[in-house]
Image 1 (cartoon, rainbow over the protein chains, first blue to last red):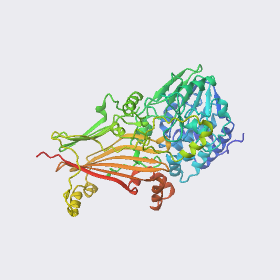
Image 2: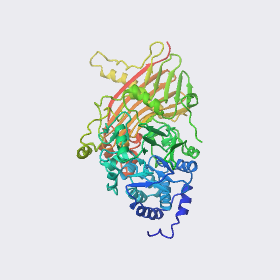
Image 3: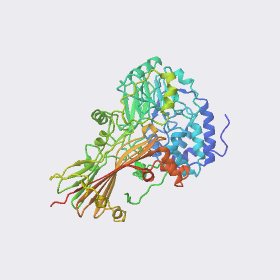
Image 4: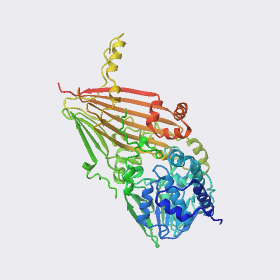
Length: 322
Length: 292
C-alpha cells in the first residue's frame, strides 16, 4: 500500500483533531484517498472479534465523541465499532468525521466505521454537513472528499459470528448475510433496494412481518422477521442505531435487537441520554450510559429548530420576532 | 456533567413572568422516555414524532379572570389527521414502489396510515375566564346589513395585531422559546411545532409556529400569533396558514437573488421562507378581559 505523503504525519493529525483543530484541505484530501484504498478492501460484511465498544449516531457532536473516548477508553486501547451517522445536525461534523477517518487509517483493525443514511451526498446537503464544510473551508472541496469516501464505507459488521450490526435494519431482499456480500456498495445510497433498507429501515415491535412506511418509501420490520433472520444466519442479536431514544438505548423483541444512540442532548436541545454498547469477549452486552459533555455548554441554546442552521453562527441579539 | 431537570421536578424547568394582570409560564424538559411515548401513542392512536417534548408548555393566564391559553404537544398532535385522508407521499415514492415490486411485491400493508407530516391546525388550548370570557371572531359592524362594506372593513382593521407597536425596540423583559415536537420525516424534510414569547412593558407577543417542509413536495407555515395589551387587557389571536409547492418556494428564493448554497440554508429557516408562501387561511379572534 503506497504511503501517505511524507508531509502528512497521521499521529500529529490525530493529536490536532483531539484538540478540535481543523486539518488543511490538502491533508484531508490525502487522508481520504488513502482511507478509500483501505476501505475498498473491506467486505460489505466485516467480521470482528469482541471485546468491542459499539457506538451509535454521533451527528457532529464532537465534544460527545471525545466524551465517549473518555468513558469507553481511547483508540486503540479500546476496539470501536461505529454504526454510522457521523455528520449533519451537530456543530462539528467536519471535526468529527476528520478524527474518525484518521483513526480508521491509523488503526484499521481497531476501529470500524459502518455507513449510515447520513453518509450520503443528498442527505448532507439538506442537514448541515455541506453548509458546515463550505463555511469552515470556504469551498465545497472537502465535502466532495468526504462524500466520495462515504461510498466506500462498509454496510455491516458481525461480532463473534453472532451479533449482526447495521445502521438501520433489515431488508425484505436480504435473508442471508451472503446476500449483503454481493451488493455493489461503492455508490451513493439509492432510494430503494437492499442497500437503502440496511441504512434506513426501523423495527416495529407491534408487527411480525415487513410493513410499508406510510411515507410511501421504506420498510419497518417486525418480530418474525428478526427471529427468522437470526436463525437463518445462526446469530443471536441485531444491533443498530438510527433512532433517537431518550434513555440512550432500547432493546426490543425479547432482547433480540438493540438500538444504541450515542448523541446525548441531541441537537443541543432534546435532553436525552446516550449510550455505547460494550460487548465483552463472551458476547455479553453492557450499555454504558452517558450525558452530554460539559464542553457543550459553550454551544448550548444555539440551535433552536427554526434557526436550525448547523453551519451558521449563533445570534445573541434579542429576538424581536413578529 | 450537563444535567437536565427531570419531569419529576418540573419546578426547576419552569419559568414564570408576571406583567400586570398577565402571567406567562414556560416549562422546558427533555424529550419523553419510551414508556410515556407508548402511552401517548396509545392515547392519540398515531406514532409519535421522534423528538417529542411532551412535558413542555407555554401558557398565558389572565390572573383576575382565570382565562388562559396554553400550548403543549399532546392537543396539537391530537389534531393531526389520523385516517391517512390527507397523507402525503415523499417525492420518490412512485419510483420506489415501481422498482420494489420486483423483490417484495408481497408486502402491501401500510402500517396505520396517518398524516406523518404531523401537520396540525393547533391554535392553543383555551380555558374560559370565570365570566365565560373566550376568544371569538369579532362581530362585524355591518353584519346582517348590506352596503356597509366600508364600516365592515374598519371593524376588521381594529382587530389586527398592532405590528407597528411590536416593531418598536422596547426592552424585552421576558423571552423564551419552547419546542413542542419535531420530526425529521426520515430525512425527507422537517416538521416542527414550537412556540416563543416576548414580553415588553406594555404588551406581549406569542408566536406558535408549525413549519413543515417535505423535500420536493410542499412547504407549510402555520402561525398562531397571540397579542396581549396589558393596558386594555385585550388579547388578539391571529391564525395564518401559508402553503406552497416546494418548487415554487425554491424558485422564489432563487428569484430573490440567493445563491444555491444560501437557498439550501434558507430552506431550513422558516423565517426566510414564511413570507414567500401564499396565505391559504387567515382568521382573527379576540377577547376582552378587563373586568367591568
